[in-house]
Image (cartoon, rainbow, N blue to C red; front, side):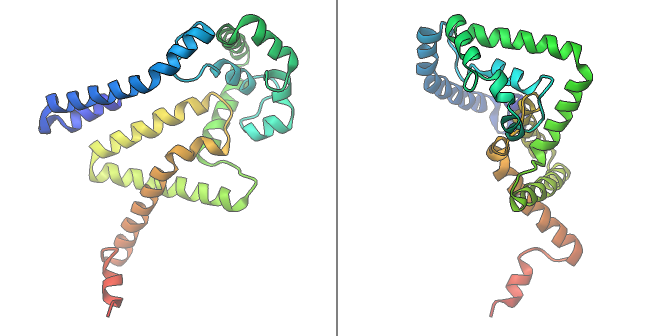
Amino acid sequence: MLLVAGAYAFRRAGLRRYLLTACLEFAVALLCLAPWALRNEMALGSPIATRSNFGIELRVSNNDEATPDQRVNYIRGVYGRFHPLQNAGEALKVRQLGEVRYNQLAVQHTETWIAGHLERFAELTAGRFAYFWFYPDPSKIKALWGALTAILGLIGLFLVWQHCWEAGLTTSLMLFFYSAPSYLVHVGARQRYPVDWLLTVFSVYAVSQIWTFCTGEKPGQMGARLTP
């Protein structure tokens, strides 16, 4: 999706040049991931390029005892029941079945649970959506800062759409496709870290635009007047 959005944004600058650059970026990414994929082919029997534990996380996050909050799940013992890092029986299954097969069966088990608990799954998904953007961190300061940058960041994104819809589309795709997997598995404070910088940039942009609207002057004018 980002590749298509970029192709549209750079169509006037030369599509051929853009595609060559994109192919180079893909080649570098594949080159960096290739040793890990080869290692997994030899060790696990499958050329996994990133991570193999989606099945585990999906099952820990979607069951009768689960909550949307990763920290709460750990405290309440949900990890102890389902996760092979805390459950010796599950660890033995990983050893017997292999990591890849174990995760495949975990996905199948969770799909069966979801099919029989659609209302509960929808409730957990809605909670994870809310916690991704407004995580209830035990630290009130961190929780407040996270909520503030989420609100101002989304306002800033809306204003970016108003100013330049191509930039708004590209950054919206980044935020959506990064955050989407977190709506399926339990959320912790660290899930939002990789996009916090972007939300902070949008927050600053939102504040500057609000300042301009309220005062009728550009954000730098006040400082210029005060400088001797």
